[in-house]
Image 1: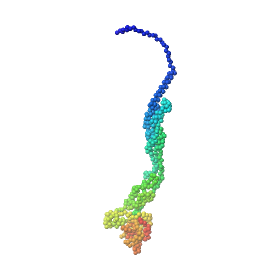
Image 2 (image 1 turned 180 degrees about the vertical axis):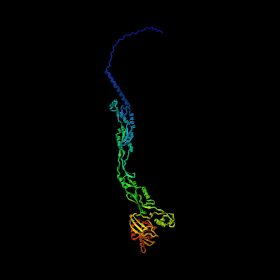
Image 3 (image 1 turned 90 degrees about the vertical axis):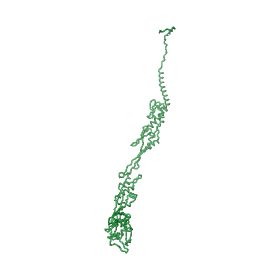
Length: 523
């Protein structure tokens, strides 16, 4: 389609030629520019610092580079700081405590156990005060220079808590001193040297825990002070000398057998004496302490050495034996012969058995109830009383009278030496003197024998041939009519069972032979 033209007349715009108009230009001065730049550089930091101060005040932050020793708490609020301080210094810290001895002992403790507590709130307050103190410009300057601001922790020491811990710990350190001692080992007494002890010095340790609180917490170490405990008794050589003196005594038992006229000495073995030593732990007094069980065992051992059928009699009581031996005295005893048994042989009579055994017939009958001279049978077991039954009085061991029927002689012994010897007359064959071991039991200046109507000067009864019928030793008898009998018969059996001496010998023996002197008669 072809475009058509508008019928209206077109208006032509006429352009006017451009004419240059002169403009006056402005020139910026350099000084103004520099002032503006400086203003901007000052204002912006100041504005930034103002905003930072407002923010630090609102949020209560610590300044950057604030540390509690080596613990960085910059940009933390007090609550965060306190929590970190408590965790780092109170809860997560361990203190290694060591003793000051050569052989050190090590113990790990929490700070609280040793009485230490870092106050989280107070320490946080100190950290937060940086930049808020009078030295605020210095603090801010330090921040700008990135200088660390080191705060020390606020430390408290609880002595009572530390003391309780040390009291418990003291049990591990306590080593009581060992005084010198006298001990019995390897069968002998010897000195055991003493040794100093030790104990935890609680007061000194507490003093140093308080003085060195900061250092101990910082280094996580502490010292436990140990003090020596000196021995009280360093030397017991004098006591050992006392023991040696006591054990050098010779406690012994001297036992006399009056039947056999034998004396036995039983010495206490050194090893047993050593076990009897008693040492007082307080006074160190040394003594013999003989237990009854030990003494009984020793007596039993010695009796076994005597042989079967012999035992000790007339022994003092245990306390007296102990006292005697501690005083260095000898203990004496008599050896007792037990009763025996005898089997009757064919053709024997009670009288012949009595004479052979040296035991009066009535005593054999008494020991065997129902036995008579007429009912004795061969093969019967008889109980024969102890020969000691014929010695009813305490024996005098240093005197003895020996009578030999075959020689018709008497020997008088004193302290083992011959004092006198005499010619005697013993019983006739139909009234023999019994052989055996007897004892001087009675003294009668002039005894009367009604059976024969005669007097027996200086009579000493030695055994009962029958109850209440005493055979004995006496001088030449005197008949009621004044005639002296058997003066010419001395040296030959002549009496009715007694032992006859001449008058002078009988009187001397009467004065010398105390009751209890043993008379031994042999065939």
